[in-house]
Length: 466
Image (cartoon, rainbow, N blue to C red; front, side, top):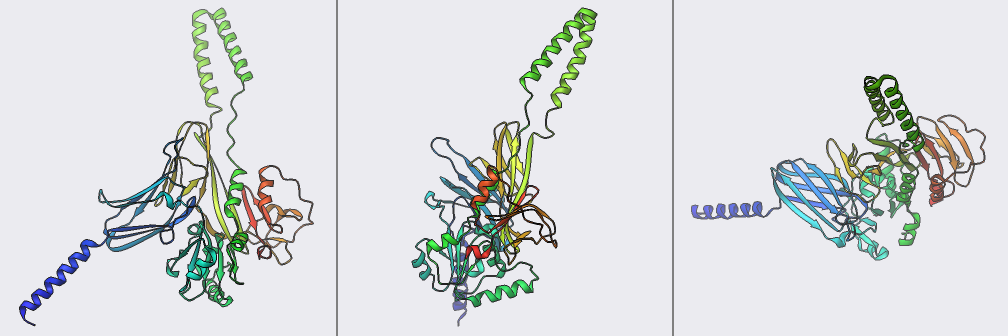
């Protein structure tokens, strides 16, 4: 080739490289599995940046309506940038939004932005399919079916909060054992085309030294392919359990001083003033006024709580075998109006204005009026269960501490169950009041539940579900 030919070839190549660099997107933001979010649920968030410095991604969801106006819920996610392609995967809670916009800021400028349409705020759960033939599942379910590569399935239980089922047939590879365990722990019905597909999961868990058996609140479905009605019947409604558990607690507001006490104190104050004037005249009155002022300040400070914000925390565990779904609930009560922060990534139980901040340190910030309480729920995660059911249908402690107030739904009760200790003689279950009774009514017969202080533990029997 002549020199002119080489020069022309290099020029064309350089122009193509320049065009490719100029046309490449600096950032991509994907909310939900393959860009399919679920409203009022935790969703996986995948951020891909290319040759962009460190910055932050901000998502703002407006939950308002015509009557209440704007009610913004803001999510702030720090993004580590640098040369090349970098990928960040986290979980965020998306309320049902009227509008949702996002922007990625790096180096003091907006490098990318976008929005999700209002029509995408769908509360229906997803059916994920990992298969070379996903159309068969889509025709069978006629729901929100999403084809997902096995490599993109996360190993975080919170990411599956809006998922109903996960279909696997091995034709397009298999997800990791950690991802399948996280999905099952989150209440997802994992549908396997063949029992043999479960063997590698068991082997991977055994090789990793995991104490968890490969079954959780979701469980495995290895029979004939289910339809939508069967999936709904098999799915564990962890959201209903969590709502009932959250309603069963709360911060007790400090009792205000009664009117009678204020009346007696005021009367005593007036009598002392009159006595000081009669005995000591003006000097005596001044002395008593100073003493009474100091006493009044002490009386004002005595009933005040140590902090203007009162907080109580508790956790709910729901599982089968030794694997459980766990989430923590934080009850707040603020005396003055203002912003209240919890050092956790959580979402409010009710619609309210707030900020969810991921990264280090994490936090959730709510704006509340005076003397107003709120409940925030942490992102769920997989954890080791402390309560299980043995082959005879009896509750056993599989953790490292004893549990109290043990009950079997539709069966007997025990005052305590401890690791390595035989059960005492059962007793008739005592009557439950209010919220605890409403919680037990949601559990299927044969399930067991117990308390560990303010924490509640639920063990679902596999034979009840299948």
